[in-house]
Image 1 (cartoon, rainbow, N blue to C red):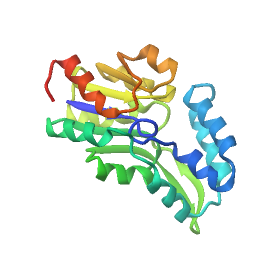
Image 2: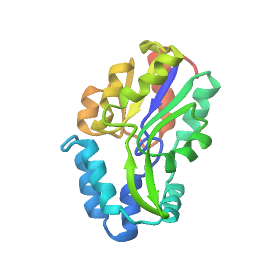
Image 3: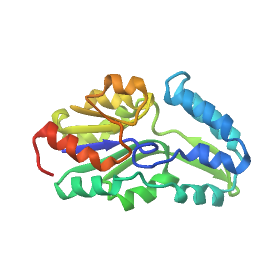
Length: 210
């Protein structure tokens, strides 16, 4: 069994780039592009490059401090702990960055994380290496095939339009406090800001007692 999670807005109760943008008073500009990307209004990859361009020159230490300060979602630790105890694999697929997911991998005991990489030059933000694009399923399938996980045993928990292709590779698609377009495509919707409620959803769907 495999649970696939989006990161920002699901495992983390925060968005990294808008929070970073507050350091240079560019948060409104960044939020505008972020929302358009999440809603599917603009090309996600193009939006990401535009946001990084606006933030270019911020010190690595500032980026790391912001990444480390992002709050883990309420109930995320409980949900991950319960699934791991029941023998599940946990994967995160993030349009965000390794600078924030490395910590999550350890704290939530994730088996694998796909994320993008911020590039720094002379200790300052200089660009981005995109390894995860708007088709997150493409990244996830690398490990799904390696682990020989069947679609019927896969759960995906997401919140944005750039995540919905993950629903194509899972049986149980969970919209967690999500955009309307995500809710329309999901099997189940969770509105409460508590990721531990995911366990009830999984138990009910698979008739389990995790």
